[in-house]
Length: 204
Image 1 (cartoon, rainbow, N blue to C red):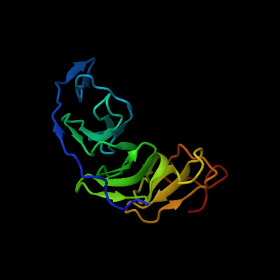
Image 2: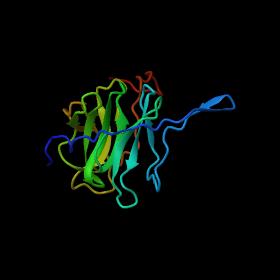
Image 3: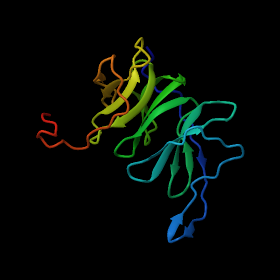
């Protein structure tokens, strides 16, 4: 078990990286960031905020001497980049529908992490799991923001399993939805109830 407390404090850093816009073929193109010397990127996954104002991404920390990362945020209007976390091992990053919160898997070692919610307004972390999990690969908010779903391998379970869980944004009602003999990945929330009938789902 790990204490239900936030990971080490946030590292706040503003890096102005604005660049002049260029017009080509009637389209505006504006580089958001210019890499530093010897810059390397290990993962190219980018996550737009639902309001379209920011992009969250995994930024390498001190490559090639470290394989740790930080969660970073870039303002698409100004090009300013901000580090939200200290170096560590992160996965399962996802935006809340209101663009004010992020969920992320955090751990001192790769493949063994706990899930946290970060409020971008007050910079507070909330623990969503009570112990480290293996292979915490994905998290997604429900469209109405009442639940957060994620997949992970529970402690002492076979490494070839991925159990689907759900938890409230305040860390309560953590519940597995599938068995430890199943592999659930990837998954998606249904944004609206399917119509009843032979091809739809019925019930609540």
